[in-house]
Amino acid sequence: MKTYFVKISAAAVVGGILGFSYYYFIGCNGSCMIGSSPVISTLYGVIAGVALVFPSRIKNKEEKQSEG
Image 1 (tube, rainbow, N blue to C red):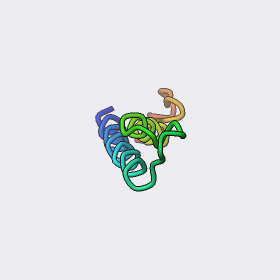
Image 2: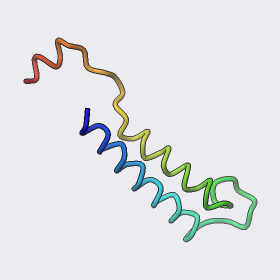
Image 3: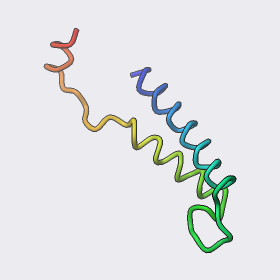
């Protein structure tokens, strides 16, 4: 359980950094939704980072016992 929290937290931080980097380096002049605000682009990055590492399903008891 603790490793999931660390993994999801790290993905959120990295995603936030990448989202802000997108705003800072690429951005736009206000016509596009993601690149026009640093807050919005950072939140999109956090959501995308968490979505990539979030477990797709919870393991049941039988799968946990067979692993270790």
